[in-house]
Image (tube, rainbow, N blue to C red; front, side):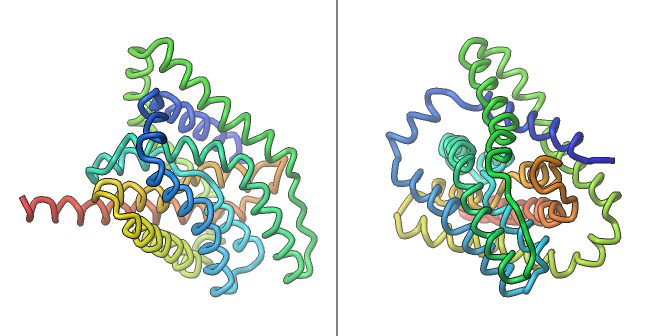
Length: 288
């Protein structure tokens, strides 16, 4: 069974959900707080891929997992980050803005970074790894930009319907991602169990180092606590479904194994960020 046919509906739903979150307020946030947007984008587009490359190199990951880990880091922020920002009493408008901007910008940065990484891995491993940039761009436009645009249009022309759809889909997003992870686990049980330790360490290190770097970055900007939390969450949560779609797509890499780091990352991401939110909420209660 090619799991791409499960990945595609999940990714379409997540991106449409993001579109229904977007309104004029989200985009006005860029003009109102450009430094926070720039800090978030820097953490996500620059720091995160560099950290992933460093972690993959330090752990001497096999080429397929090296590519898979960096692929996750090159993807945009996940739609769940907006919910986590709300739970952490962050800046939800900023969260939505960062997720939307990264979803558009990574349409172009992802092929560039992955192209360079593919060449690097090819040279080191003596393999021939081809990245069909054109097909990757088309797939991202169809699976990301198109459903997000439809969501934006629904929010603009039918705001009440969009709000109802958003509430329903918002409840389905996390279970859908976990269903996807479960299907991949069943299909690649042996590979996941065999490599869970090293890939769990890799995914955990990527998330924690990304959160630490983004925290330091946001502190240098002297942002409010809510903005700092939002940037940390946005940089720490990536769209694992997109990484899975690219890795397993028959038009791009056609590799279920390359998607395994994204599956483990999705699990680690939710555990670590839930702990982060729990610590924040407990601290808030103690200070109240």
